[in-house]
Length: 249
Image (spheres, rainbow, N blue to C red):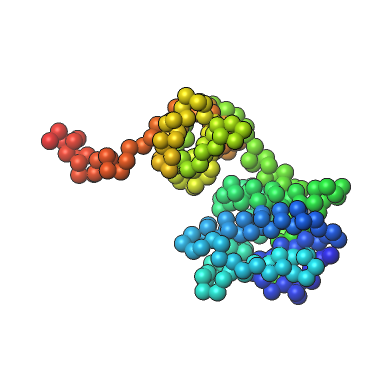
């Protein structure tokens, strides 16, 4: 059942134009829709709380709307978030990755494009920017997103970031968060290097090994062979100390 445009009174609205919606599809829809809005909030209101959105579920669960909490975002920030979200999805559908779409944004877009996948025909899913404009999210966006995220090649290399997650579930691995864009890079580790990974928890490290890259050259994961912790800040020479060292004094 489609939502009536005149009923929309939220800033950004996800429309689920389906006769029947399972609990799992509804949960998946909300998780990835709200995740996409949070990612846009980080881009266009970086100093604000990205989760400061109020939720409205439209009658019949045909729509999920989000509006910024009063006093958190400016009108211009909300305008930037909602209009760039819609235009970004259109770019993604054409095969172009928007410069302001993080990996998480692309992942959320892919998930929204695969809603109701048990149906033979694509689901009817749209995102509205107020009542102004809407973009349909279907299999094309899901396919474009998957193509952008898939691994293209593997080579010797290294990644640099903060080691902030360790896991022994299934296989030994840790996650490094890139220092530039906070992307998560999964690192598979062997028993021989597990101790140094544990000692480097929550520290900045360089991880060397076989790096798997996407088509755009961004690293996705690493089979770690060596972990090199960065020295603590107090051990790094100041600019004045470096000048003295270079001058030989």
